[in-house]
Image (cartoon, rainbow, N blue to C red):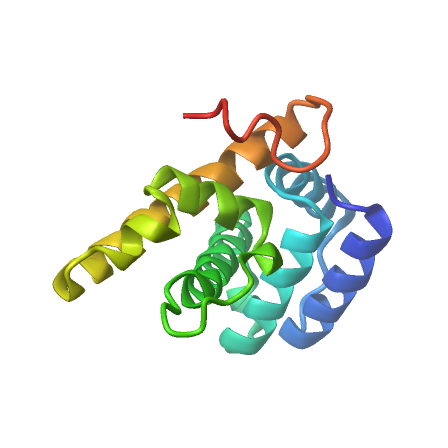
Length: 161
């Protein structure tokens, strides 16, 4: 769920940037729709991506779909950053710094030891598989948070599959 104060602050920034003020009904409908699809952190990330990547125009104000796609892109970027840690075979980096999503995605693709035995040409395919699993886990956690299933973090990671 999106904190109403976070929503108000981020939307004020975007409305100023785009030079468009949303009327109350549109703003309420947009909040309701986005609130069903993401939390405050994802919404803030989406706003930052939209702010940085969209040319401002009153006729180009982002739709609900734009916010969701911007947030999704942020999740894909996060998965790519965590893949760098996972795939650093030379340093044996501390995997405890990975998010729960990354740890579970790594487990689902066979674990780090399995990656070390792959031929070099197979690594890009494993990265795609890791990213796909990461996005799947994140989406499941988001769905669970929207439907109100209790739990901290991604519920039942080992049971989800």
